Length: 398
Image 1 (cartoon, rainbow, N blue to C red):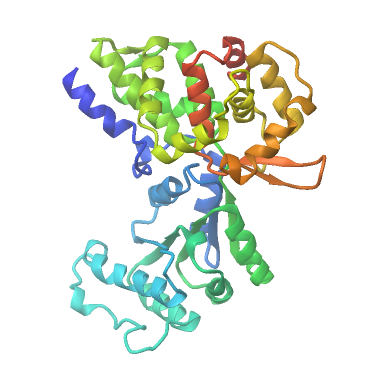
Image 2 (image 1 turned 135 degrees about the horizontal axis):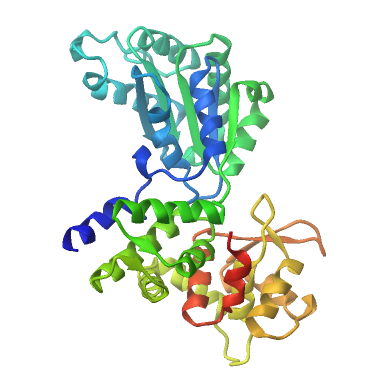
């Protein structure tokens, strides 16, 4: 059991993206799109979606799904202080540092001279020439993570770079990772880049994909899980792999500490408690600020929980009418929209921490959580406080 307790941290990794093909779960449609981009000359990719949906994990395992041993994965992160020039110098330096791992018998000092070495600024043409030189030795796959952190001023030249590499069918792929707005802004700057950029949207995981994460991890530990516990994890994680891994880690260790190889509902309840206790203080404080009230009969906590359980559209937003069903299940009472409409407005204002974002026109407002990681926290907190009826889990299982 002791070894399994240690191994649980390898199969369930809530704090880091997946980097092993054997642990990657779900996302078949998105994986096929990204692999197609890597396989085709002149094609590049943008993986976009909410924070925490597994964009980096998808990029990390791409190479293992492409039958080309000559691919060199190059991954850099955008910082808020980065310019177009500094970002690409990071890329060039990363290749110099890691060349010995991919070039076989070539020594580092036999590398072609870096194209940026004597230039004042890196340009799209310099990047094109450098990638052509790399192409004689290996196929570069350049992943630029946190692309949304790059200042808007550099989006046009980045679009020019993608188009230049595509027009010349340069051997290599650039994969950008960012939130949804960043791909819209990139294309707005250069509409012709659309044909060169495969847009891979990463939605939240379906319940079945969340279950696959749990099953894969437990299979690696030679453990099992009760069907009801699995169904509840599929709802509690709210489609975010971070929380699926977090609950899987805590629940498996709770079971092992009880000398059991089966994750039960009781194991999950303890896992939820641990997850709530270990949540970021910023999330705990934000939820407290949003729901605190001097009135004991206030509805803020119930309305926020109902928002977290509301059915979302493809863009991850919900309307006031979507809150009504969960409200009735949670409270056992029918509520019309006017009875909680003001709560939704306040959640979207500074006095309650802007925990929700509001968009659209009056009477057609749509809402979403400002920080996607808050939503599962609210759901788990409601579960721990026995506010969510078991019928809700039954109706949402697959």
